[in-house]
Length: 308
Image (cartoon, rainbow, N blue to C red; front, side, top):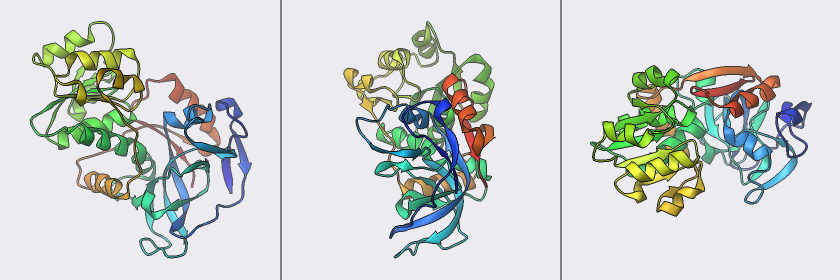
């Protein structure tokens, strides 16, 4: 199979297109013919060695954890899927090596869910990691009906889904974004505010008594500090990007693979409650270009690699 390969820790310049052996399919796994693979900041952070202290990594490494594709083969004891089924997955394995930037990827069934019929392949590939991160963060902060939640980087891949999910949970959403994305946020159902100096005051103008919860999907001192200032209870501040949130009594959260949660996200998409905005797509061979765009920031929604 063709795959994007990294032979050592590095950045976009180290990515190459290579022929690699087709993945083996272990018991409980299926082999997926990849149609599209989502690009996430964690992909290039991992490639730079940012997760070396916590995750076993083996080279040559194929990046990528988001996938949408068609089941090509099933392993022993697999009853959940059959050849030809269309699936999506957050295929984060216990060690890092065989990711989704490839024509084929193997995945345990506990990492997969049926592809939402309402989403095209690129949208479907952009849903798993971002959707799971948003859903799980909001749930862990007990965001629900009648509450006001502040979402940082609300126009990004995770944030845009977080806005829609918070609305679905019955919450009012205030979202931070650059001014060029304010109309986009309003369409999603958020009240937009601009980043930068005076952010806490701008949030208080919309929520004089403070917000019930704040979720940081970007990282950085401003997001965490402003969240601490405007949230009624520091325990209801969470971040998926900055461990420093714990210094204020907040919660640092990582997304967990969950077939059940991913299936629920798919159902919300098919019900018209949730959509995935794809900013740009690139062919697999241009993964390095996609990484540079991701590293530069200011992406509205998702970046996706098209494969098959």
